[in-house]
Length: 435
Figure 1 (cartoon, rainbow, N blue to C red):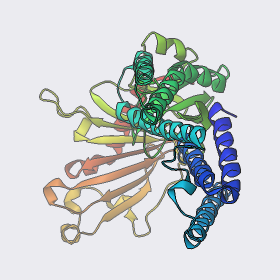
Figure 2: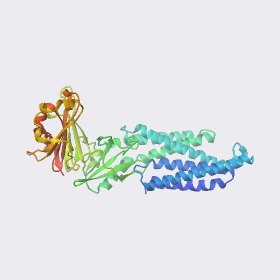
Figure 3: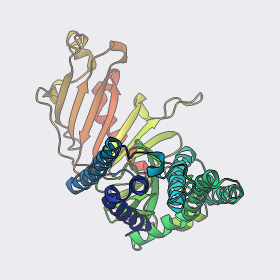
Figure 4: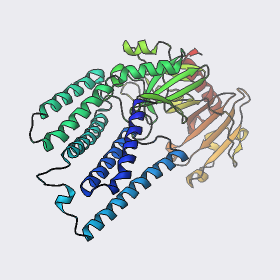
């Protein structure tokens, strides 16, 4: 169990103990114990964070915690109602504004707990705001030192009910920042342990776009924080299979993922050295059983099973793919052909001029499917509706282990077989290593 896990369990235990006894304590101590229980619960929730892939046991656990807190709140409300009915609910009975101050030390603990929760929340917000920057370790240490200095400086303030919660907020933030400053090394060590000598690499996902982070991108504050999905992925290559693990910022460790990778990268046994030497290649990807190197003239998005390339528009070179292709996709997913139910035989298609223009103008799709006798690929051509001058046909060519997908201009439709060969040859030229 991680440090965060032990801390969360300790806080939940404190919440349970304080909450259970609070309704039976003297009124002044009762509400303080209930408040401390609520703060312990809140701190535990802040540390544990949202559950990435909740299951039934997680849902039951969350429901039990919610019911317990509701029960304590109800018991305290009944206790206050009885005290009010008996005219016992006074400032003196609550231990407020009394010269005797019987619960002074409990108040100090309560103020420090309030400040500690605030410090944790503020640190989360700072980390979220700085996610995607490139400060790395130095940014973590700088924030830790700044927060620590502010915490010491605030200790000279008076009175205590002002400096104690504010100082606690700074001290908690400084502690978290200092602990988080070792995240970079923990990530490298965790990935090496996960890989067990196999090639590995890191990905910072953002939708289907992804990149391999540099050493300054994986600091505690610098690491990009995703609201939905993984913050950082370790991709380990095991022959033709991949092991995927998500980095947990709160737990400070990799957890094996069951939802797959959001992107791909270039697995190497020496990736830790590549990180330290800033020798990371963004346009090199592990796809299926191969390593692909995509030139900068092409835009690429990838997962361990799919590589999609598209032409990069520029003033000098607006289209770099042959025959006016806009983009093309290579997939190593299940290559079972998907044959549309109302498709026409591929043998009936010879030229786009023979397509039923009136059918296309009505917004209907004309689909052809069949086997290419030259390449033994199963072909599906879907000619879509739209303005005639802009219409294109989506081509899906399924081989023994791979599937090519691209769109073909109508005036090139009769050359669908040659176009598929060109796309296959283009992807073959991008292969640099077969694993």
